[in-house]
Image (cartoon, rainbow, N blue to C red; front, top):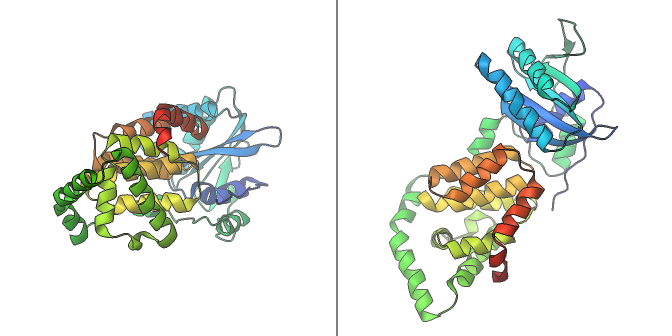
Length: 331
C-alpha cells in the first residue's frame, strides 16, 4: 500500500506548488480549497472545482465549496484560485472566504501562474511566483509513487474507453459467453454468486500481478457478464477496501476494455476505490463514465451523489459495508 506523503508549506508560493501533488494534476481555471485542523494548520481534505464563467454562479460555487469544508469538519481553510482571469479569480477567492462562516480563513490567494495576490495584501502588482516541477512537494509525490499529470484533460484521457475492432468483436460474443456460463452452472451446480465472485477476483488478481494484457478477451467479457448478476455485485462491494493505486488502475483498465454496458460496474468500482483514497477527481470521472455506459446503473448515481454532497470516504465505506453486510458471507 502506497503511503501518502506529508507535505509542509512555509508560504503562499509553497501552497500553490503543492496543488499538483495534492490533486494529481496541475489545476487550471480552478477554485481549490484545503481544510486545515489544529493550531499548526495541519493540511487535510482537498477539493477543486471549475472557476465559473458566469457572474451569478460565483457565489453559488463559493457556498458549495464552503459547505464541503464544513462537512469535513475543517477548523480552518486555505483557498487558492488559479486563473489567467485575475479579476474573476479575486472575486471567487473573496466569495469563498466570505462563505466560510465559522471556519477560519488561513490563506486566501489567487494566481495567474506567474504572480499571486492575497486578501491580506493590497499590492496591485502582486508577488512573483515560481511554479517548479522540482519543488519539494512534487519530488515527495514522485518518491511516494504518485504520478502528477499536466492537467485534468490528461487525467480524463486515462479513463477513456478503448474502442476499435476488439471492443466491437467482444460485443458479438456476448450471447455465446452467456450460454457458456449457463452451461457451466448446469455441469457443476453451485451457488452462482460464489462462482461468479471467485472468477471476478481471479481476473482482478491476474491484472494486479501481470497487467491487463495478460487477461484474455473472453475472460474480460465473462467478468463483465458476471457483474451483471446482482448477487455477484453484492458480494463484491464488501471486499473493496482502501488500497494502493495499483488496484485502482486494475479496475480502471478493466473498465476501459469492457464493451458497452458491461463497463458500468468496473468504472463504478474504480471510481469508488479512488473515492476511498480521497481522490475526488478520479472518482467523479469513474462515476460519470459508468453512467455513460449504463444510465440505469443506480450505484454509480448514488456514489456520485455522495461525492457531490461531500460525504467523507470513511463514512462512505461504513455506508457501503452496512448496505451489503448480508453478502459479506460470500467471501
